[in-house]
Length: 215
Image (cartoon, rainbow, N blue to C red; front, side, top):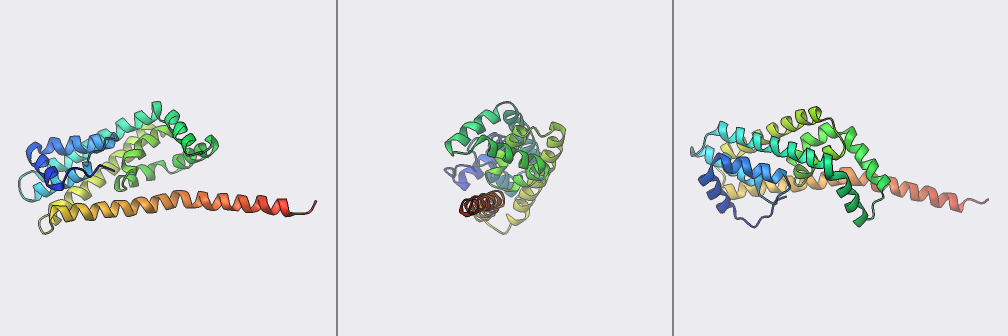
């Protein structure tokens, strides 16, 4: 999730001035974890294409290339240094290594779908690629899903802003997309952690029941 310290108007000016490079570098650097509004820059690129200032296909290609390359870099960061970092973060939140290994296994079982769907979810767009590296997802498989996800995401964002931007102000379009991304994030968190919470409650109930049983 990017820092919203840059106004949409300023982002539009940056996209207008630097064109395709702004779109490419914006989403690439966001995928590397930098707090840059890559998604907003991509929307601004599509918006400018809709007004005839940029070429739709080059904006689309720039967004796909930036997202794809950024995802690949994130994968290798996770592959070579992500697990020790995750263990350190787990200690801060008092998560045992066994639980982290369980989450790693769950990610591995759904890695392809997660990498693809995460493109449309705030925060997960940044962390899905490093997590795929941590889970040691086969790189060729990762590249396939990463490219498919990057293409689908860029196609939706650029096309949406290309057409909708002609009748809706860019600020409102960006707000709608951000709201959708946050809702999707909350649903993803619920999907991941609610089963874990229910499982822990069931284990606790079983343990309590065993203690109450007479010898």
